[in-house]
Length: 143
View 1 (cartoon, rainbow, N blue to C red):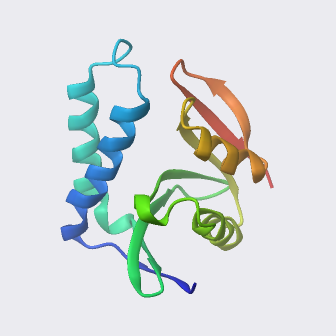
View 2 (view 1 turned 90 degrees about the vertical axis):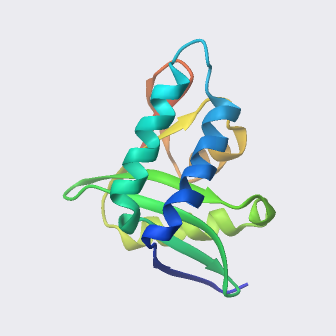
């Protein structure tokens, strides 16, 4: 399957937020955070930065989004979402290949501890735990 990329547009904000919200609601420990504040912050962050996201296309169909932040020696893989019907098909691996090859930098990211598929993918690429934040890890990958 051919994977291509394009810049996200303002109309993508709702869809990105929906995928982000789904992930937070599935993996976050509601006893440890004020979920309504977290979701409000996420919605604002996405809306204000939506054009920094990259659309992921699989065979011409939109299948997800990602966002890389930062400049210099270290970048953050801020968000990385595939629509459910595209998960488990090796697409995440190919997109992560693209991201890491395209950016000559160290990377860090936040990932929920209970998000086993994401943890396995990041560990496969040499990401290690930098910090334990309770329900999440900060993981890093050095060049």
